[in-house]
Image (cartoon, rainbow over all chains, first blue to last red; front, side, top):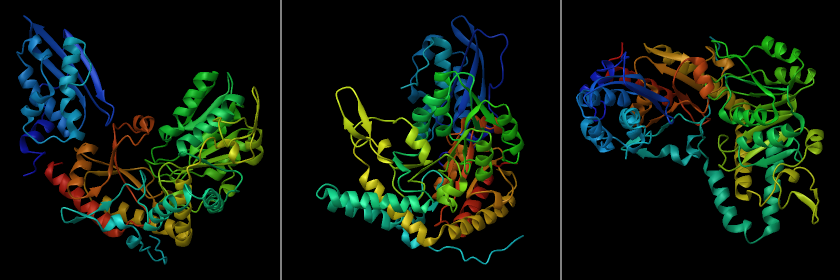
Length: 126
Length: 406
């Protein structure tokens, strides 16, 4: 069993959850990782201050795609304020795999895009 | 299929790093297009000269440095006086874009480059065109990774092209461009030409006189030499007429309060303290390559490329990008693995100490042309062996298995 490319990571990579377009949507953002060219966008529908629905889209490596898919299931129903306060370690813990410094941005791209859509802050999560 | 009678090179013992093991596995280095490994003679020469000559004995340092320049010039078929040292190929190209381009390129003129250029042969021309109001135009890359001479003629026939710049060998596709023919056509149209030889000099016997371009740029660290040194060969009358690039010490003859006069070639373009250790190191590198003979280096890498193309074709789901035939290619192979992102390919190969590159290879416009976000790339040097190619193929097979790729 590979430490990084575990079965559930590969499963989320090949069959990503909550991927596609969402029309109509209330919030959106699009961003990329300039190092490797991974790109990711998100459409979000908001109800009562919470994330009612979302869809990621874009292309990238197994880590960036699986991380978005796994995190998307947690984002559903999350209050916007809670999302705005999330830190990078939240994604890393959620993935449950050892992420090297070179792959950290792959894992965090989905949170960067989500925070960009919700808060307008397009900086990399800490 | 043609066979060769040229024996493969066996020079691995000259490169100490290749005997290094990580986790008990040998190093399989397939990233020579990014930077070559250095033979012990280059490393030893630099160390010895830094400690013995450079700081204590200025004349000895100068002799070593200028001696290296003469040998580097001869290695590439250039003249000593028109062989200018820069920090790297990027700076060599910028030198031309600033010192020649700002003087001669204006509104309505065209700078012509190709879709397969490295960023170092794109961005300096973008800056020039944005500043001067000139237009930056591109020769297309065909699906087989080649350029069209007909399209070159068509662009030149418009009469607006002031300078054309193109790679000798693509660092992504491996395509060997017909640079002598291209330079001749550019010249016949009354325009200037620049060849980016960063991948050419390490892989082919290069005679810049025979290529016939007005400028030919390359870099040391891809040609078994150190980082921090590049080379610009230029046509003498053009270099003499050009204004300087960087101002400072060494590049002047006299300095008065308001005006200065310029040193002779090549020093007119070398402001400030020279990169002495790097020059001497590159001198040792070209001595090493000259002793190997570049025709044998080319034959070795062509056979390896032919072998690698054959072996990669055995793998389902692996698609090679660029010219299909080893004769038209340098030792650079970009490929895609269906269902596996290039970064995952590189990461998985790295587990087995197989070092390849993944990404846009500083050629983002070419990635757009190819319709891919990135590629995986294996590239060869004189020290690369068939066993390295076998390790690549075996590792790629396991990558496909892990991803259960279809």
